[in-house]
Amino acid sequence: MKFRTCVALILLNIIAVVYMYRPWPFSVVLESLASTSELYFYVALLIISVVLLWSTIPKPRVDPANKAVFITGCDSGFGHELAVRLDRMGYHVFAGCLAPDREGAKSLKDAASDRLHIVPIDVTDDFQVLQAVKYVKDHIGENQLWAIVNNAGVAAFCEIEWCSVQEFQKIMDVNVFGTVRVTKGFLPLLRQSEGRVINVASLAGRFTLPAFAAYSMSKKACISFSDALRQEMRKFNIKVITIEPGLYKTPITYENYLIDRNRKSWAETPTDVRADYGEEYFDAFLKQVTISLKQARPNVMEVVDNMIEAVCTKNPSYRYVPYWRYRLRAFIISNLPVYLSDKLFAARFPVIQPESRKSKSPKTPTS
Image (cartoon, rainbow, N blue to C red; front, top):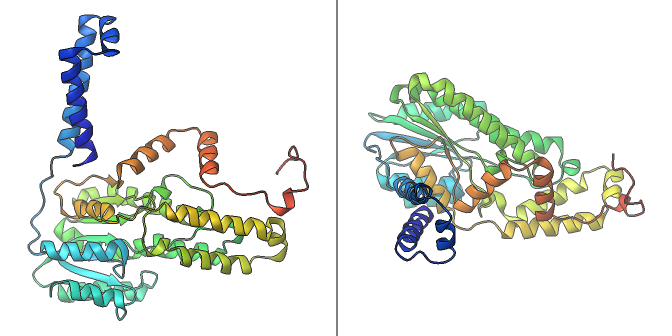
């Protein structure tokens, strides 16, 4: 049962119990209210319950017959699962894979029907993107391109001073310019079908945690691109949707990968910078990375379910945030003053004092 359904049923039960039995402390509160105010209390709870129940009713879906979907990043993770699910629903899937000859692409092909095509694509390569567009045009047949899903992405989890400029550029090229390249390439086909663009962003694009600068920058840019595209494509009846998950267990959040990238970046950092931080600080940072990654949610299907909704429903939402706690957390953080959100993030990702600060007075200015 969905969380919103549970809340609605609880509220309806509260209304019934309070109305019939008036238990304490409700009886004290209600007796202090005028009769009209008491009526407003019941009506407000009833309206909230109805709205919550209404929001859980399945939305009408489009007919998958003769509809094709192009997805990037299908080697593993969200893209891999989405390709399999859409294929089983009857869509013609063009699964973009960075490594079409490796296990991820091969297992995808084995799990799907003959309708699914593996398409080689590196979203950072203009030529490969053009070739992918050509492949779809050559193999789409009598079908129409209904949706593209820009899912390919990379991440880094390291502090700015030891995150190289090249690492920033790589993340931006995949997460931002890759999305732009693929979208621009396929828009002419989407205009014919009046289809949709689904961009996989992140809650990191709404607020930034320490050591997440490069990734958050890319996802903020992805959201901005999606916002502009949505407004510009309205005249063509093309819908633009963002999927904004929190932290999930996917290949881009593999602990060993992120730890190794940190060690490589740290080794390439200038000696004087490393001396200011100290090896003890860096080791403590890596431990916090491990702790944070262990909190990643394992149920990737929560995200894939939202991706399915974005592709398949007739009237999708503009924005999907999987998992109710992530939605609640995002709402709270987005409305906090900056000094409070900074304290909250600092408590979530505590670090020890850098080496260069240990001998200084606590009152010494830090800038």
